[in-house]
Image (cartoon, rainbow, N blue to C red):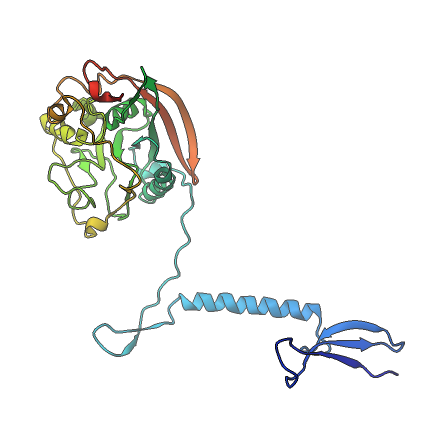
Length: 350
């Protein structure tokens, strides 16, 4: 009986000459009461069900478009020619691998102990553990990561300096009997090229971070960064010298031990990524290296330690904790190293 009325409104930023915009349609029933609101841009018989079906259809079309966009219907320019040629279909990017991989006996009979000397490098550790676990799992290398955390402690008011080699000796002795070879691995060096070999080094020590690939160190006798050895060969060298407190030189001394044990050193071949083979996380402005040489340390750092090593390392494991970092398992060993100040007075900062 009463005609339908349509309410109009005007956008606030438009002037009086602007066209009115119909927002909603109000329908009155026969008694003059408004019964429902219908968007003015939709058909009168449109319902919530129709809107739901339309949304589903739009979602399906969007997924179809994404699939086609990465499945090959893309033309690319031919190199060296100014013309368009149809390129081969490119696969959609694979989903990221799961954070945790279950080891399988089919991966082989050997198991790697990744020994990571560590002190106050938590930002790097949060990146290192998940990266290495995924990297080694993709290569089907059975492994376990040991974070060898040197515990800060004071002896007669003096702080012990960092000793990378002694930590590796301790980690070797504490690693599980289920592992039969080790990787002496810096926490700030991440392998990027999956062609790098982390397999069992049966014929001799294998230097993964060779001078031709390491982003910083390029001298021929360098064996630092990442070095693989069978446990038998590491024992043959009597491990590393425990005399190197502070940063550097322990690797150079270990190179002499390798040669003295009659072992042949092997390095990667056929790697074409050069100095981009690894990602180096170290920031020298933020992570100052302890390069100070105290007392006779300047002369001692070039001497071969023929008495000490794996058989003479003195330490105590304060705690052993199993952790998961980003879904990757590892074991943190809190290690307190002992220092003979009579033999190495440079082991502490007064």
